[in-house]
Amino acid sequence: MENVRQGRARFARRLTQMEMNRHIILFPFVAVAAYFNFEEGQLFPVDVIDSLGKKWAFLGTSHADEQFGNYVSFSWSQFSIEKGLKVNDEVVIIEMPQGDDEQPHSMFKIEIKRQIKLFGVNIWGELNV
Image (cartoon, rainbow, N blue to C red):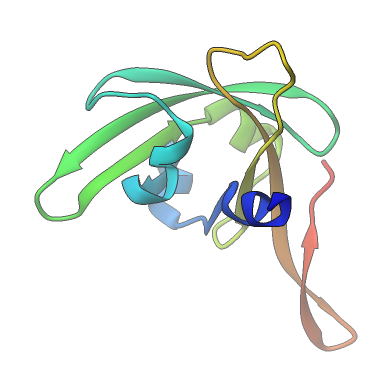
């Protein structure tokens, strides 16, 4: 049962030029709804830990749009600049297990993956920056 939970406790996407320009990342509402308590237009905290163990606080907002549907944006200007993120980098956000002292919201681990060419073969590698 734990493996099933681990499989569902993550969401990922590749960064677009628009997201890079605005220092945000967008997720469909259905991909993240199970992890956050929020109302449309209200801000909510998204606490993450990077691959080096540094804690970051992103600001989340939910949006409803007739053309694009419901989605959630995370604002992460300082993180995206410091990490040197690029278009097409893959961002993976993984829910971390909580202890007995239930926090008001979840903590997440964030992984950044970039496609590199190694001996003529494209592979995905995790950035540790």
